[in-house]
Length: 336
Image (cartoon, rainbow, N blue to C red; front, side, top):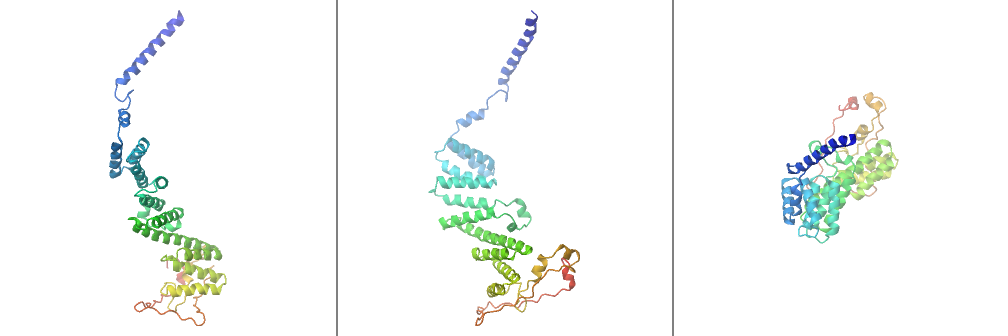
């Protein structure tokens, strides 16, 4: 009798809770199935594609990615399937998801190798690698990109080169060529940055190899080529390879006679370059009085017997070099 009286309130409480939960289905947003899900199941392919286009035009790329993925999943063989896959590459690129954009481009190229806009997939793949290591701060602050990891830059260079090789007359080819010129200079500058590190550590053979790599693989680079020749001159000079240093110096003098490293007499001056690079802490703390870096004298070019320098074309005579003003002992103090 006592057990029955104890159980009765519990049964009444349970019945009340069930009634409240059942009533909640009539309250908005509680116990009610999302009507959007039912509407989405009945959405046609054309409506989904239109929604994706509106999201792309408005710059809502996350929403566009969601709709395009849903379109591809529900209508894998529909009329908009291929275009949705290509626009998915673009949306991921615009959302700065560069690795996923490259994967999506590879997938599109693999599935639709004969597509009319296949060159656009190659172009987006290269752009994704091109902008992988870039950020908004790079547009505000000028940073040296050549001192970063060059993996993405090499990927972009290879991707754009593949685009130009397969589609040389593509509408994206001119922009790809300009970006490759820039990447070529960046990659060459990166090799010279590593060579400079080796020069600081006294690894002259490694520095010369890096400079030789630049000359062999980036022969049309603008600024890196003379810098690579100067690195070879210095490295071979410090290794005691006078003939090899003179060969590199001769190539530099013939192709870049107006380079800033030459003085008024046509000799290569490495003093400032080495002095600014190889200064030790002792030299900095004593304002250049102690532990001065060893710098070579101005290197004079020695032509082989019977060699005559090529004539300078008319109208392209070398301008007279301005002799730099000599500074006194204060030159050892930084920024003086």
